[in-house]
Length: 201
Image 1 (cartoon, one colour):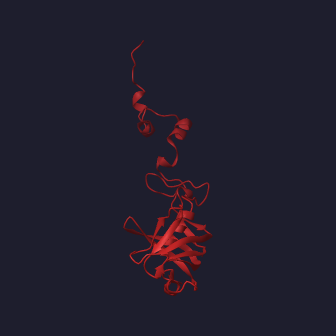
Image 2 (cartoon, helix red, strand yellow; image 1 turned 180 degrees about the horizontal axis):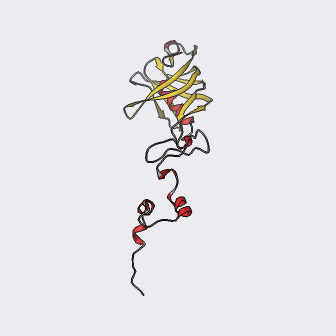
Image 3 (cartoon, one colour; image 1 turned 120 degrees about the vertical axis):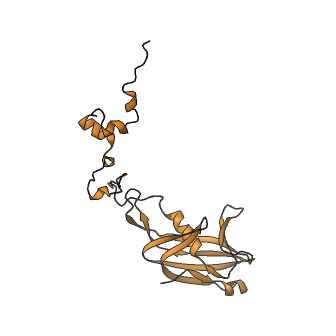
């Protein structure tokens, strides 16, 4: 298992006739966003394979594959959901010795360019961003997921709880009616208008 996905580009920078290659597998990826460190979790070893070819003038092209099974949270009940991804990698690169950390910038052509300053390139941030771009915005562990009780957080897939938040107020009222002064009546934002007397025209 690889601690961090790295590719060594020193030889490639010295000789444009050589290519660089790296492969391995990861059980997680860490990336920084808004000065906060985040972690992408994988359900098992996530294999990656990367090749970098020189294009000249400190420019290169990276291509390869990354196949993680990303662990995401169900949007309703927060259970872990395994999301398999098959990602084809392909991006332009530019060596800039003044770059403290690798970053992506948009070129005039609209393509993203991976800019780096250390020939011993850590691909963690690049692979993390590529994974996030390929992952769905949200997932459900089951289409029929009932979610969590909004009062106590009980998983409603495991059965009902004592709180009324498990059933929509309107559904209960339709079946039982709304007794005057009941909790449901108090929850209804329009209940206070029931006794409002309007002036006759």
